[in-house]
Amino acid sequence: MWMVCPSYLLNHLPNYAVIHLDSIYHAAHLIPVYGTNHIPWNIKPHHCYDTFHAFYVNKYIDHHAFEIVS
Image (cartoon, rainbow, N blue to C red; front, side, top):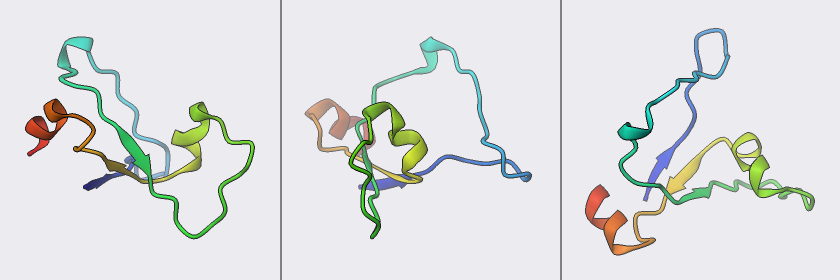
């Protein structure tokens, strides 16, 4: 599996970009890189992008994803 992480500018601000919906080819299934710290018990799914700093791209989620990224 590949690892992805957010990019940051030189002043440590997140590098945000607005993309057009037509440029999205396929949804990705991301698995957080948990590390060695304990996961907070009150974490919600919408907090994952702020809590974790790296993710694995799961290309085995379905056969379409496997064909696209292989």
